[in-house]
Length: 181
Image 1 (cartoon, one colour):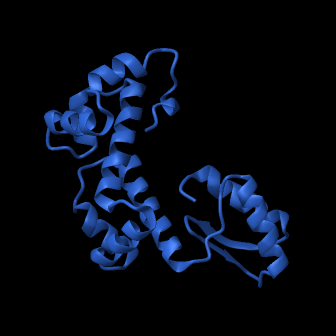
Image 2 (cartoon, helix red, strand yellow):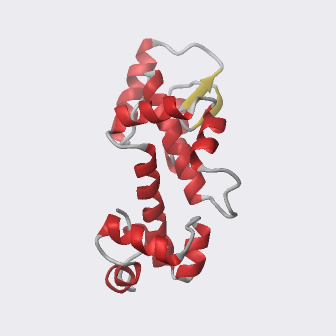
């Protein structure tokens, strides 16, 4: 569960099962009473229909927590980062970064660093589409050292420059949510 709408779906499905919820957060649900095998099966099917899955493997749960932490850091970053991504992830998830990196790479087939770059470029695309910030402001907001660094990374990932993307992909007929990788 990375987004609020995913949490709402999970909450709704659990309440439909008559379960009393204590907490629903990314990768974790706490209920007040035991959950039967039948309830788990019903929940799994409902989540699959909603495009979600029930994670019961500790490694998959940790990978989801990494994804959530990275997404949160990128999508909701308002100020300069006080620490680097690896230190932040280690502190937030209470694991050594090397362990997190190995688990993530094994599960996703890519490194955390590459995932962070892809998420940052995805967010840059959204910010370009919103047309509220100039490239200097976007590069600062996304913690790039310069516009040139952002532009180089953007072109490496997408094959086009940010200005070309804005001209081609973010005209008035496209909504910002269409600016995905």
